[in-house]
Image (cartoon, rainbow, N blue to C red; front, side, top):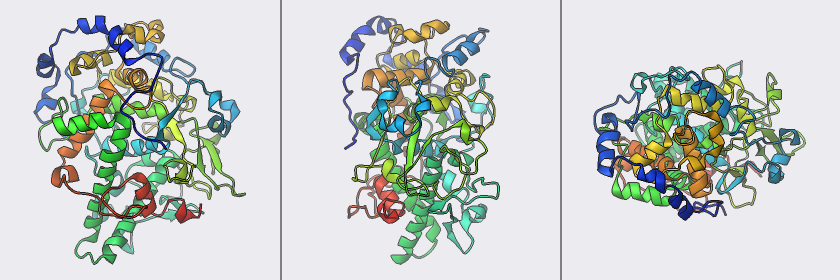
Amino acid sequence: MLKSSDDPPKSGLSRRGFLTGVGAGAAALTLTPAEALAKVVTTQAGGLATSPDRFGRIFNISPFADFNAPTLRQALMSMGRPGGVIDALDPLQEGPIRLITNPELSPNNLDNAAQTAGITFLGQFIDHDLTFDETSPLGVPTAPEQSPNTRTPGLDLDTVYGGGPTADPQYYNPSDPAKFRLESGGRFEDLPRLPNRKAIIPDPRNDENLMISGMHAAFLLFHNRVVDHLRASGQTGNVFEAARQQVRWHYQWIIVREFLPLIIGQTVVNDIMANGRRFYRPAAGEQFIPVEFQGAAYRFGHSQVRPSYRANLAGNADNTPFFGFIFDPAGQGQTDPVDLRGQARAPRRFIGWQTFFDFGDGEVRTNKRIDTKISTPLFNLPLIAIPSGDAPTALPQRNLLRHITWSMPSGQNIARAVGVPALESQHFPELQQFGHGLPASTPLWYYVLKEAEVLAGGTRLAGVGARIVGEVFIGLLQLDATSYLRTNPSWRPTLPRRTGGTGDFRMVDLLTFARVDPASRGQ
């Protein structure tokens, strides 16, 4: 059974060896922990308000490189290029099925036995709930505080609800506005769509691949079932608002009790909950999304995407499984694409969730490890997967250029500010070829991936990555006057579990309650 672990598995470098190896770098630290808090944490994070509809910073640290250097942009483009040091070099010619059934074909792209494949897309769904940058130019230094975040910076499912049935009636069932509108893709549920197949949902990114559109549809059904549940129990008054609160709180519970322990470790979750946030400390009621989170640390999930997936067990016309690459250029322009891109409708385009979450039937599959190797299909994104619709189409290149956009500090300097051992040059020999001192002053996104690889065997985040992600998630909930963690921290889930009873709630329970689970589909 897949589970979270707080202890890093064995790897080529032991934690003791790591601590010994960073001695020289740690000795160069010029800030004491007290000075780090006083000088490195920004005033925005430390207490002055950063507008919730803008991005901001946690750390007041100089950028990882000299942005005036004429060759820096090209160095980052080379670092993230197809076939380069970050490319897992998956043998795509083997086809989508063999890359799943024969993992030895991709020795650079290891499976993560601690997490199921669905955690990747739950993470993407959550990301879209928190942050959407539609205006800042890629690779051009921009002040975060002047850059709008078009999502609300809270775990409130605004990507699902929009402004509610009065403000955004197009998302809701006209004959029962307390419920969402859904349509059928032929065999099972699909998002409502325009004639051009674009989804009628608040955030178009939730239709960029089949898994994320399937998860969005599952949440629509989950809400509708909660409405039915409340009505059956005699709910009076505004049933929509009562259902929305139930859905949000159960979703937030899953994040705190299932998602976070898997991606940062239960020990870090416990430390933040018991001892408080040390670095993400915005003024009460003034949540904001820090660029260290949005532009780097929370992009760890890109490393967990598999080249291909089994979308379902019996989607094809002959009742065989539908396998596909996450993205495949051959799918461009096809009505029923061969890959798993979104913005399409066909009978086989639904998700069999037993591949993605553990229903105890032996069908679940894992995601990939958090490391510095990215699945090859992500180096050639279709334009529908890029909200701005512009080049480059290699996701790692886009992530690295985002460090220039936000004038991001190096991972090493943030590690020193946080007070954890910093990875140093010897951990990044592959970056020497790109110059600009990148092995000793590494872009934060790449640093977080390497940190997870070295300290946690790729099973979860560690050090800087775990601290940033954990504090932001928990902080957003603690600062939200409508969250269960702020309003009623002793609250326990009230909806039934698939195994019976109440008091806990996991993704398999949500999918079962929404009736998109294997049993409801006769699988």
